[in-house]
Amino acid sequence: MSETQELTFSDVKSHNSKKDLYVVIHDTVYDATKFIDEHPGGEEVLLDVGGQDATEAFEDVGHSDEARSILDGLKTATLKRVPGDPEPQSADPKGVAAGPKTHSTDGGAGMGVMFYALVLVGGGLAFAAYKYLQAKSEAEGK
Image 1 (tube, rainbow, N blue to C red):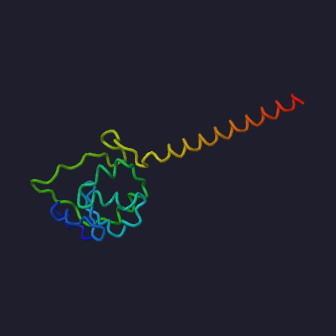
Image 2: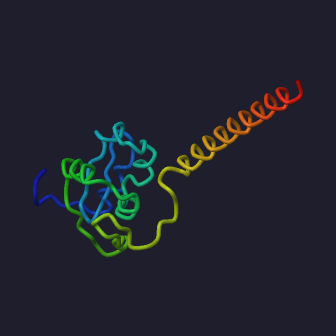
C-alpha cells in the first residue's frame, strides 16, 4: 500500500461484494477480500458492512489484539472525507464501544447450550433419585 493513497466514500462504497470488499474502520480503508473466508464471524458479517464505515461494528464486538494485527495487514488507504459523506462513527479504538451493546455477538448460543445441559443434568439427577427411592422402597417392602 502506498502510504499516501487516499480514497473517498464514493470510491469505497463500490467495493461491497465477496470478490471485492473494502471496509472503513477509524478512517482507514481495509481490503477484506482475501480475509472474508477466514473471518471467524462468517462472511455475512463482513458483507453487511462492505463499502461502508464499519468502525462501530468492529469495536462493538471487542476484537482481540490478534484481530487488530490482522487488520493492519489489510490496510489499503486512508479515507478522505468530503462534504456529503456520512459522519464518522464514534467508537473507542481500545475495544470499548461508545454506547451500550445492542446485541450479543454469539446470538445467545452460549446460554442455550448451558440451559440444555442444565436440563439434562437435572433430568439425570431426578431419574437417579427416582431409581434410588424405588429400590429403597422395594428393599423395605420385602
